Image 1 (tube, rainbow, N blue to C red):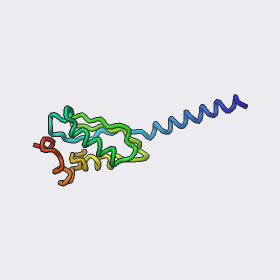
Image 2 (image 1 turned 120 degrees about the vertical axis):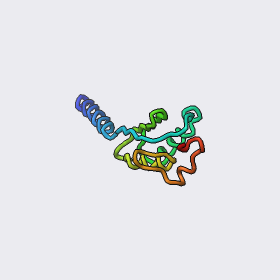
Image 3 (image 1 turned 180 degrees about the horizontal axis):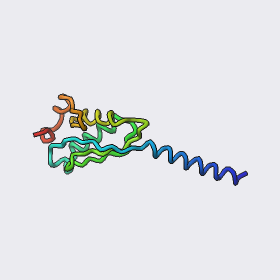
Image 4 (image 1 turned 135 degrees about the vertical axis):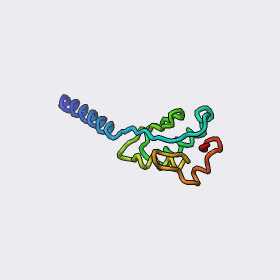
Amino acid sequence: MKNIFLPLILLFFIQLSYSQSSKIKTTEIKTEIACDHCVKCESCDLNIYTHIKDNTKGVRSVEIDADKNVIVVKYNSKRTSVEEIEKAITMAGFDANEQEPTEEAYNSLDACCKKK
């Protein structure tokens, strides 16, 4: 009897891990980070990261490349969407692909983080 349960349990965990991995997606969002010191002081990075994490569910990781003006987000597609992630970035005051931030969000940025 034990010989039957062990393969069934193993098969269950393999299926579970496979189904989880198929939900995880990665998106690259174009933005415009104006200041040249955000990586050092982390004002923009922390602002973007916090808005994404606080306003979307299922985000696994956020990587910001200020030099390339790109935000790479790994997320669970069953819990959030690219559109929701873009909205969170615009709420932080930054462009997200074709979406622009609201005036209020943009005005809340530090002066060094605004477009010149």
